[in-house]
Structures are given as structure tokens and as C-alpha cells.
Image (cartoon, rainbow, N blue to C red; front, side, top):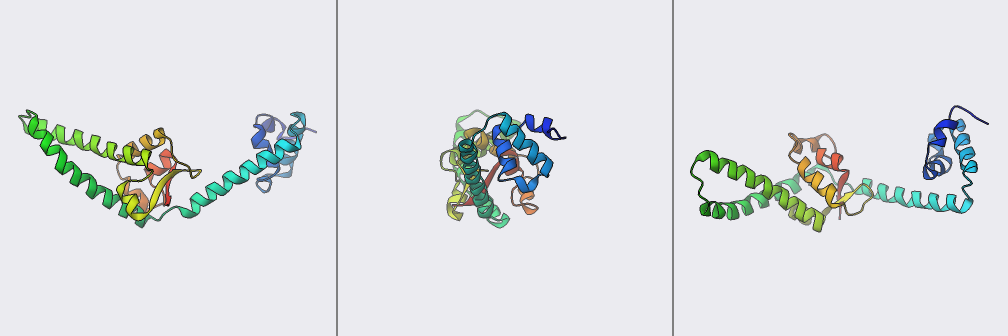
Amino acid sequence: MENEFTKIMSTKTDRELIAITTIDSEKYQKAAIDAAKTEIQLRNIGDEKIKAVTENIEVENQKISHVDTNTVSSKIRFVNFLIDFVVIFVLYGLIIPNIETLLSLTSQAERGIYRIGTLIIFITSYYIFFESKYQKTLGKIITKTKVVNLQGEKPELGDIISRTFCRFIPFDRFSFFFTRNGFHDAISKTKVIKD
């Protein structure tokens, strides 16, 4: 029997249909659930597949719940930032001026461009190296936290690169005062949790 949800349910994946009729059923109207059940029958999705997909969804939901409950506070995030900020500028101050003496920079403008450029490269290299290899910067090591994707797993290199460049968004540092996840977390779909 067709209802207003029949066409919508025909566009859903098997996994989405199974979720609608099992784990997420409280989120849907009876007519939508009936349309999803009908679509499952039309696709000949058996009980074994329904059971396997349901178990898989439950495991994923547990991982997401674990990430959400272990997401660290804004205060810890700020401590991470301060520690990393100090480490970056100490290392930068030790390394970059020594390289600068080897270059023939004649004007203040050249030195300014060089310093800004190398600082950006230094910051991005620091975060990309530590977070992609260890899921932690030195700040996170001290506060016993780590960066994960939304499923609680190690983020892909692309996620870390995105996360790192999003740090340059103006006011990114202040976004943590309004939410547990700042701009660079939300955009890169990552979180910082207790290790």
C-alpha cells in the first residue's frame, strides 16, 4: 500500500531503511516506518542482513556516544593551545633566525615576508606532523588528550590538513568559548577527547 513516504523510502539505502525500521524507529511516523518495511520486502532484504546491519549501527552509535562523552572542555582546549603556542614560538625562535642569517635579506619587507611565511609553514608543519602521526601535539600529550574523527578513530591525513588550515580562520581560538568544538573541529569533523 502506497503512502506519501513510499517514493522517499525507495531512494534510501538498505542501511538507512533498516535503521528506520529498527534503531531509529522512534524518530519516524508510523506511515514512514510502514513504507520502509514495504521497501525492505521489495528488495528482499533478509533477517540475517537486518540483524548484521542493526548490530553494526549499534556499534557505531556506541563509538559516537563514547566520543561525545569524552570530548574535553574548552578550558583544556585552551591549555592545549597555550602549551602548543609556547612550544611553536620557542622552536621557531631557535631555528628560523639561524636560517635567516644564511639568507641575503636586504630590506625590512623581505624579512617580514620571510618571517610571516616561515611562521605559517612552521605552524602547519607542527600540527600536521604531530596530529597525523600521533593524534597529539605536545599540548595534548601533557593534558592527556588526542584528536579523533567523529567515530572515535584516527583521522585521515586530509582531515588533519583541513583541521590545521582551519586554525587560521579569524576568531577560531575564540570559538571554543561558545562551544566545545571550535571552527577547526567542526569543519574538519574531528574532536579532541580524553586519551
